[in-house]
Image (cartoon, rainbow, N blue to C red; front, side):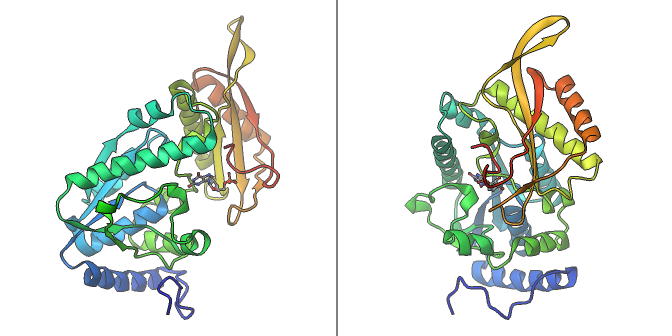
Length: 326
Ligand code: XMP
């Protein structure tokens, strides 16, 4: 049988009992494949890499080294959550690399969306490879590939937007969740005791907030995206939309409009709110956020996010629009 095809008889993992059975099987399989050798894994904090890491930690403990690269384009509190869960709660061997300046310096002045993606992908690989070279005795690369990655993008994790590791770092892959669909990965994550904020996390693009800071990224505008996103997430949590809406975020376009503050004219940025529902991201409909809640979110953004004087809502479905702005 093709080793990249899910066994049609494999049971659908839709409850904790089945997840626990899957976990036991995978722990055995990982131990058989890896033995007492060392595994390296890029841990973004997304559902797939987190579940993969948690499985590997359970199977081989300190023989797994996780590398979390902060590219400066993560959401507020994201790196802190990865460190808290993996280092403090799961006692993982975790290397945290703050590479924000390196990424943001390379992106300065670059306004083409695909060039931005390429720069982020390339530096990510460079940083990860540099960390890998510092370590001795790594023979395996853990990867949170899931089944749609195989069926839809020929085994390459599409959201990493990267090429591959340099040839001298061509480790054998360990991919314990590669036959699972996303909903199954979440059930396994839950069974492994990962927090809901990680297990039920909304999709987040590999290039992170870069695609929500359209045009050439400036640190000031990026901060506006990050702060407004944090407010939106906080409010969606409070009003119960967080668990219901598929993807929600803010965008700050690269131009200003006039406003008025303390009797003086301003020329500042605007925040765009986008909240959509989808099944597989190929199409999306717009969530109807009630106006009362929307006005409250608007008030918080205008009061708390420096440099913003206007709030808009994007009501465009996909198609004709895409979900992200770049
Ligand atoms: P679009 O904007 O194409 O997005 O409608 C569809 C889904 O894919 C996510 N997305 C990305 N994910 N790297 C990623 O890993 C990317 O470059 C990228 N661009 C879009 C987007 O958030 C949505 O869930």
